[in-house]
Length: 386
Image (tube, rainbow, N blue to C red):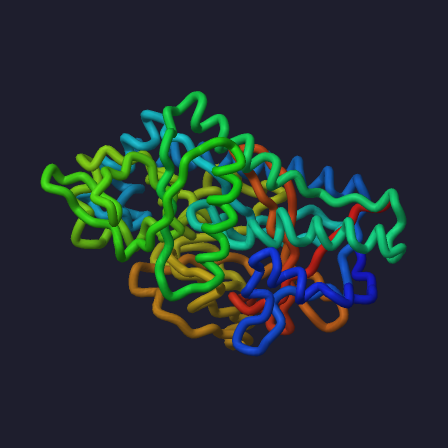
């Protein structure tokens, strides 16, 4: 695994705008970057892929254990009045779409799981489509050799999954929703809507704020049509605490992602994984902050419901070495042994490993000069050579 400098495509910004990638630059800062790329060997990619598959299956075992225990449902801070709803989603095996594991990996040592973005992972567009377009363009331009490849069948697998949802799970019309205040979220949902349409699914977009409540307790769209299937880029930890939560069980909606994802998108997953699979080579020691646990000299504290690095703190020998602000933390915290991200050219690099329908299917890479990867961390493409 190495970072390789390369000349940018001269027209990439025009292409980004042409293909709807309007958040390639945010707040006057670059998000998409292509002045370099990350190069992997096939053996390294195979290690990421097999590790991702194993970790995902371990996460599903956590779901099985948590839904069987009132104590653990409470430990995961899932509101008691929603326990039946979450448990039913798992016991009826409500289908999922996709997820992304965040891994620390340097190409030499075994990958380590940092967290699981199992509910609302963003960046599928730039991971699946735009970095593949970059690869094709750079090969055509002679900047990359013709045998350069990419670990990236994410778009193909998303389309296949949407087709499967239509054929075998009765998805005829799929509504898709996100909040109004995020251009990145809107771009993510638009891309997924395009994949669903490619699979032959009828789709309809609306904002979360536009979802209505019908006379019979069903959720409705702006045309007062009943919503039967809904992809929502909106966290379960928010939804399970809102006014309409009491209607969730009776509304008859099939959710993407299903409610059981509220368990493995929760940082409480990490201490339970360590308890169930102690000393696993792809896990880091992790514990609930309120519980007695072995002392850790260098550790990270994470809120159970943190996103984009918010409210994460890194401590070494009792001294805080990094801290990110944010609105989370009151729900409880976990502590996880600190594991450094590999450094390239003065930046720390995080690997996102994608799964669709429980199967690994691609990676994305983010760089940041700070220790904690956040929403403005830069996205870089990758290739497989050797």
